Image (cartoon, rainbow over the protein chains, first blue to last red):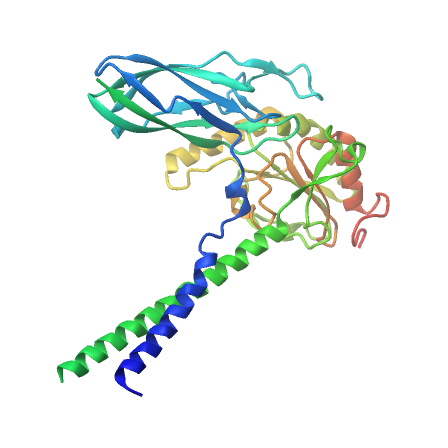
Length: 165
Length: 224
């Protein structure tokens, strides 16, 4: 066998297992693929005045049959819905006004009311941005339940293209 | 001579690549095996009789762990003591997965307290397993997390042991990711029933009786 042929055989042997592993690389536990309970609807892009607080309404939707705690749940242990902006994004969250929750009670315990969001809800955010265009990935943190069971707390990305002029 | 060196370098490089590929393949096989195991144990939503399941929409979760041996574990209770499922050998045990942020868990807790009191003389015990997040890397935050769980346990007057760090045993128990979840283990260590979400006190009692071997005779290995 010539050196070239030997090298080709070794190369082929190396490539076969590499190629064989590729379909498995994306294998992930099924739970990681579960659709989030809340979806960010819009806006994808906003234009604000640079350096000044500008009101931006962020629209979300809770999946049918589910509810999430409002920003001000009635019990201390319950996890509130919150919005966070990364500090290094060039955009600051000067304030956020969350809607008032609606009362919800589990059928077996109608007297104990929770404060929740269902369906679509809007967060009024006050954004202060430096001059320029910023791709901001804010985070909405929430904890969802249906009428008989709860899911662990979860966060979804809220991606907004902020253009500050 | 120069050509020989090049050939040797190429061959060594290829052998390294071959070795890495083999290692990567092994890692993937391990990962796939774990993934398959997790899927096998994972609870699934199935259509069923609404009256039987206690679910308003006629759907309920079913666990493939029913009929299998309960995976053993060792966790720490609120006093810092190690507690293993194996410590409860010979007892009927309800593993109740819950969290302080879970409102329906708090609704069923008084039922659990009453049922444990009622069936304890027959050899029934409840182990509460908290799925609250623990900041293990930060001692101050960890102490705060534990204090929060302790506070809720005190408020709810839970008399049975509450174990911490349920997340660490989620996988062998099917990663159901819904709370409350309960597994009912008979005296021989076999899971005879599982419930997902808030059901009713009657459903819980029925499952406890299965675990004790005093139910409808449907328990697996009950009464041994």
